[in-house]
Amino acid sequence: MADAAFLALTVITIGSAIAALEMRSLIYGSIALMGTLGGIAGFFFLLDAPFVALFQLAVYVGSIAVLILFTVMLVKRELIFKKIEDRKRKFAGIGLMLIIMVSLGAVFLDSGIKTITTDEPPVDFRDIGADFVIYYWPALILMGLILAGSVTGALILARREDVENDQRVS
Amino acid sequence: MTNELVDFTLVSVALLAIGIYGLAVKRNFIRMLFAVEIIINAANLNLVAFGRFLPHAGGQTLALFSIAIAAAEVAVGLSLIIVAYRMYQNVDIADFRSLKG
Image 1: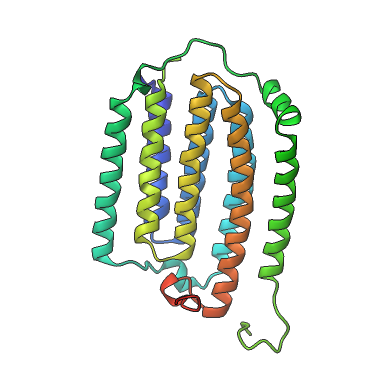
Image 2 (image 1 turned 135 degrees about the vertical axis):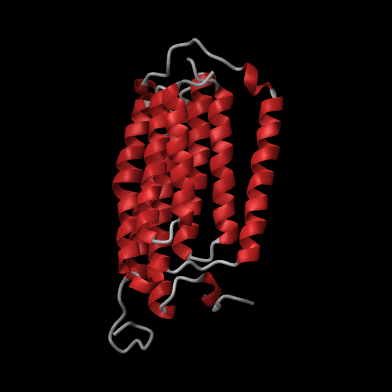
């Protein structure tokens, strides 16, 4: 049976995920997204994974959410508050969401997952470090290269072109 | 542990469904990026939950990789948003028709 902390985190995470998508203002939406990401970090603490939780807080809440917030601030004021959606499409989307929730939820509740419990001690974060440097070191190097490449690519993409470019904002 | 694996899995299913709703309904590029982030987080939650209950360090290791790759994806996604906004002065994906066949 779930405890009170779990239920509170569930309400915060799912509530702010809905708010992130449905709030009129994109700025409040991105702040609500921070709530979702922070809620997931709380779940990681409940799962005895403090290292991943702090990584989530540092990378997601600390940098990605702030980056999104700054990008939103670059957009025109009227676009921040404008909701672009089709009413018919919205009802179809809600139907799709409910179908996925009910069908996948029923599959999980009916499966053997319900019987999986554990009394074993949590994984030590030193094991994760050992995993990284012993088994996954090529992947770690590749990930570093991908991160460097993507950040460089993002900088090149977002770079302002010279004045002659007629697509540029004056 | 008082919480069971199925509880975490159900939260993850709910987040996945909300993310798919956002991708299907929203036409705002930035909101679609929010939806993608929510789906990635649902996947990470599953990875860590299964890693805790098996128990195996692989779940947390994969979650760390996933978080780092998501950071790269957001950097590229946001730069694409900035470029598209500069070109079309809008964030509505219906306006981005240059690649439409």
